[in-house]
View 1 (cartoon, rainbow, N blue to C red):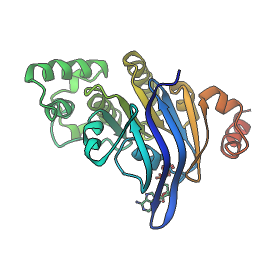
View 2 (view 1 turned 90 degrees about the vertical axis):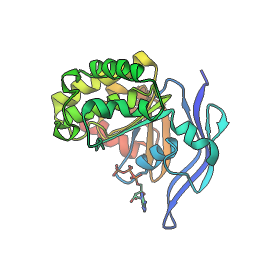
View 3 (view 1 turned 45 degrees about the horizontal axis):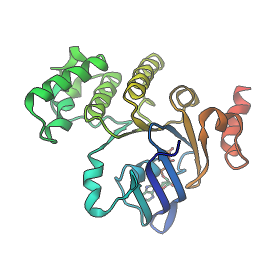
View 4 (view 1 turned 135 degrees about the vertical axis):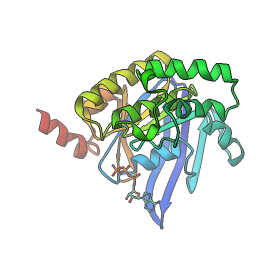
Length: 244
Ligand SMILES: Nc1ncnc2c1ncn2[C@@H]1O[C@H](COP(=O)(O)OP(=O)(O)OP(=O)(O)O)[C@@H](O)[C@H]1O
């Protein structure tokens, strides 16, 4: 079903006159769990920042639920978006306060904040860490706090830029299982950058291959991995060869 949440048209991003992203047209559908893969420097983080309205492109238009995003509407739309990065940029305070922050700045009532914080701490299995200082957490714990902070605002779309890449394998697997069930149960549209084929296969239902700032292929994850087109096979083909 065609139900685009974010639409890009004729997007160009340049840095110091070098073109780093060129997207003639792209649609992120509501409910899509999109993986972004591609070589280092392909423009994945730049595409994520463009979709998340963190960096305006030099050219092109972005629509959110069919409405053109302007300078004026951008802040309101950004409030409906959550971003979690590899480095979990937590605030210099307790886990509780970190998770509460998104609702505080949205002026939610204190009682609602308390209920919601406890709910999301429980979902991400970190209730026992509520009073702990955020700077005294392990990498896996910090990433759970990061995800609870992101999900508490009930984002329309969740952006994840390699959130698990620094975690050990069992921690990563557990966290992937938890975030997958949260995202599926809440039907949250998600964009997920990863270099890990296992993570992509397990978590995403669609996959876009980005090479040299261009989307070379975008479709159901299994289809893209099994039948890469000639452009994306330069990247995917290596994986398939390795795993065959
Ligand atoms: N602010 C900037 N100034 C100059 N060049 C930039 C800037 N931001 C990104 N680039 C360049 O744009 C290209 C794309 O970068 P980007 O971080 O989006 O790639 P990526 O696919 O996410 O890479 P990686 O897999 O290594 O994280 C790279 O060549 C990078 O050096």
